[in-house]
Image (cartoon, rainbow, N blue to C red; front, side, top):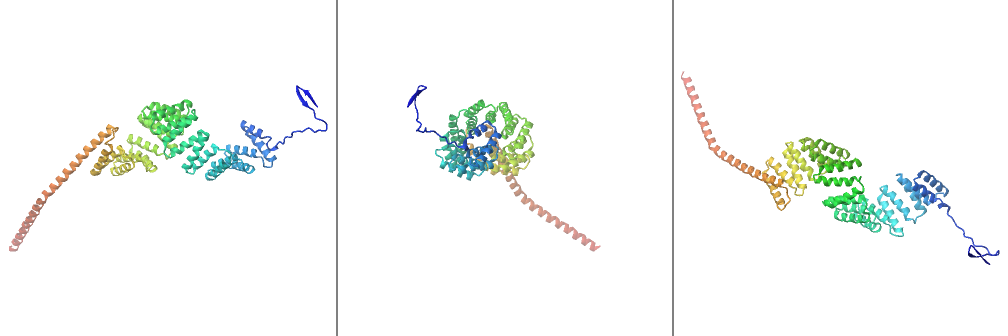
Length: 474
């Protein structure tokens, strides 16, 4: 039997027929998951933790979502070990969930257990139903921490292709920089800027990479764009300051550094560069103060020690310069510039022998540096080693022969040293010749002196004999 109700035909059911009813089997373990999530996203952590404890107690320790959120909260509170235990409970309750294994691996990585974290991420990759860029990215991070750059690059490239996330691009650039492949790193940063053109960190990193390769114009453009997006980006301000400082625009550079140092007052590079700007402006007291501030932040920074040594050399304080430069040499015995500056300090301290040793070590470490070779020639001339000085000067001529960009002052100095060396060598030859002639002339004179001595002795003996005879006769 059917009838019409609300414009629709409805069929009635007889008394002898039972109506089918739909029953919903609700899972009591998950009925308050929405409230746990709501408390968490609102930042009501105390209420969220209290609700999680109640749900875990009611479920007799079988509430997967409650354990998961508890682990997330504990990790944000830097309680990594307790968070790891919570995520391990999630994994016991549901072994086939790749997200649980990812969280366990993340905690292991934060605990610096890189090998175990890598194995966990590989297990998550195995059981994952679809490729996950986050897993590939984290596997790459683990390989980087273990020192395997080749494998790290392979997985990071997969993460970049899948997700095109900024963090994956950053990791790949870091790997390429560690390998010394700066040009490929620049290409990766340009590709990253296509995906995230408003990323201040990526613009800054791209600008600094261009600056390392000496590409000033694209570096300045990237850094300026970063500052336009974020005027308080200290790294971008530092890069712009470096470019203007290299062009001897010290006031502009100082204006950038002063803004950046207010944002990042513990930056070694900022205080070092500010000090060198004051040094270029011949404000030596301010330069030393800023450099010592940088040295206070990082006492083992060899570049700051080297700059302090150079400033003290310029202010005629070779003893203080010697102390700073010795520290720089001990920290970086493979760098030529500290040895060169140390040689200058020893030369000012009237120790030409050790100065020559420092210059020769700098010459071995440097790649045909003109200043090092000419300083070595000068020190060798001072100690009288003219032949070695001539050898170094001839090497300088060979190296600088095809260089069209050599400084005129360096060329004039080499010519002056060459003329002085030739004059000294000629003078030494004349002195040796004169000494040999004087020696030959002194030989017959010596014979005459001996003969005269013998005749005088004979005369004295004869007079004594005559006196004896006269005394006997008396």
